[in-house]
Amino acid sequence: MVKLSVLIVTKNEENYIARLLEDLLNQTIEKQLYEIIVVDGMSTDTTVKKVKLYLESHSQTVKLLTNPKQTLPPGWNIGIKEARGDYIMRVDGHTSIPKDFLEKYLELLEKHPEVDCVGGIIESKGSGFQGTINQYVFSHQFGVGNSKFRTTTGIWEGFVDTVPYGAYKRKVFDEVGYFTEGLKRNEDIEFHKRMKDKGMQFYMSTSIKSTYYVRPTLKGVIKKSLGDGTWNIIADQSVKGSLRNRHKAPLIAFLMGLLVLLGSFFFSPFRWVLGVVIFLYFTAATIASVGLVKQQGVKYLIPTVCTFFCLHFFRGLGNFLAFFKKEFWRFRWNRRKR
Image 1 (tube, rainbow, N blue to C red):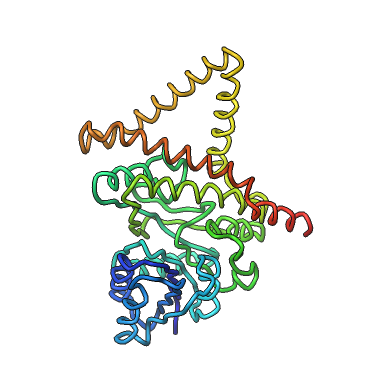
Image 2 (tube, rainbow, N blue to C red; image 1 turned 180 degrees about the vertical axis):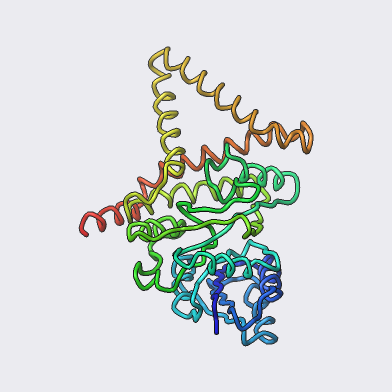
């Protein structure tokens, strides 16, 4: 009997997919307890070719589906509809997992059968000079706020407002529906809000750990921050209240900074305020960077401060640009009509 259906939605993941499939096929639980469903978004690299190699030797466990719409939400929905497990979970292609990953999920699900979705923590990992910085920034509270699944250390478990790589009870999708396909990313934020509106709960345990491979360049951080910032705001228009306070902070900071900057062109007091704000921010970023400097050396100081700034600035810019996207107004209009 299949207990867990593990969904992987891919597009051009040739550098990571084989490692993740190896991790999943070498778990400590029996293979009849889980299935692996790869939903590929029309990859143009060797992702599909690599998955098909595993189909040949593990046809009873691995299934490959195609996602012609190519974005994440349709991919998840295709996988959910094909899943046979009592619980359906998502894992990103950029991830690696330990051998007891699924075993820890089953243990937590058996311990808390009343919970609708369980998950664990993510340990960010990067390679090279900038990758090391990105790993640090995405694991630090100054970078990601009070995101428990990224910053919690030690042994801890309890109820939270969201989890990554959640294992959802099958009934969740029967009662809540599927992921909103008009969202190109951050679809889990909006979906989790719909779950909470129905009184469903999330539970996190540090016994469940996975490793996420961060982008190795500053350009990658900027691109991710812009996209996440934009689609966070759009997701909030689909279901009002989807965003938590930590999601709103970059927009508030960006708007306040823009207001002070514009004011500084006309009123001299605003120039003083702007100077103070810049000084305080970069002082805080410098203090936050000290941990990595102690580990790796002083050459990491300025690049780490710059990376913190890019993460925050482009997330806020993405928030702001969302108001100029047609999807923002379409979701807002559709919500008002409901």
